[in-house]
Image (cartoon, rainbow, N blue to C red; front, side):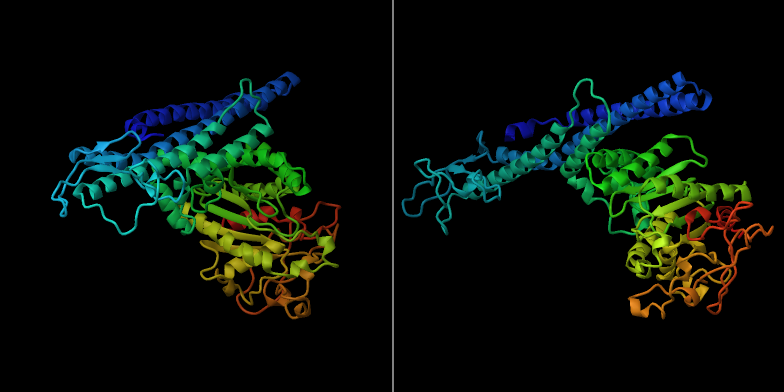
Length: 593
């Protein structure tokens, strides 16, 4: 890029290109939504024939094509916008320098050097000091910086003699202008190269079939554009509170929001304090990018996550009651996933469930753990059909990868590191929920199961407790370290506990018993009751459908119960998340526990 090209650059053309690509992206997004809602969704609900199923598959491919067009055109639009925004500053500085040169009647040469006239008087000879040429220094110690080696009388580039000052009064002014031109041109070239490299990746071959490999390429495209548009990333308030992040998002223009969603879906989708609808939109794209990324990896961990991601994607594409919102997704550690059934920003009742032992982003999480969150939402709707509820499952930490059967021979669950790392993240998420919820006084419930109850319990014991929490439910808990309910910062009658006699986790050693095993989870009498009684099988008695509140004073064991077992069956351990008392939990989530 020459200084003439930078001077003559029409930023309005870049702005027009941005608008055009934005229209294409928006049209593709709208078309994809119409295909999903009005065509494939309606067909799937009303027709069951093989031909109808085949048509739905074709429509899903069409929807995927539109989704890909939306994503890629959004990246092109963001690139055009970023280029226009960033290159405007050096262009302005160049034009200012050129205007100064014109005002002083200096000559701007094709290479950006400045010719200046004779001026001043040689005190030895009495003659006028001749004019000359000032070569700009762009500030870089590189071979292409001609300003480091001004040409001598023979046209050779040699270091300028130190300590000598050109007595011509025009020289200093010309040198300043030449340096400003060189700096502006260097910055513009760097910006142009960054965006050129990013845009060169945004190509699609004719007849492209959108598959997992295509999404892997799209993930690389997103990363490339993100690296180019680093000025956007610098503006994301990562180190601010969720409330501050919401305020930041609210003051952005729609154009700025679209740019962030196109370039940084992984960041915006997982940023506490961003509205739920926005996080869901970002993560529905991000999940496609993650599937593409992991599809090219053969290790067992990646393939396990891939199975979970595909199942979650399938659920997102299918109709859901309540509606499903993807509030977080990622491949860190054992995987991250935050899913809500119901909109937590508009719901009057909101619960956030922390799963425990063995939970990771896999097929079981997608098929089982999500269903339990949905069942809680349905239980709440049954208990209070006139009040809206959002039920969230929060996998924002790494739970120990153990089964209940392994606990007798392995005491990893006794260690707090995973829970201590997860507690602040859980509180940050809950602070985001309180910041974005539109109700004046929403009813918020924190739920922890198994090792997740330790995570939730530690979060509740942080300063101020779990943000916004009115009630806490702990099921199958090894303990929280709290001596009384008050230490969980919700007060008497607002902490519920539950387990079964054959729950291995709640029978783990308490703090004193585990002292010889390392830093233990303070269970049993140190806080949450360690076990409960249930009715024997076939007794004809049904256990209480929901755990009772923990008393204010004293480390007392209490009777509580889990979901009733099937008639003629046998009670399963409360540690098994499949027996979480979702109907009773639904009542508590509504404040009717």
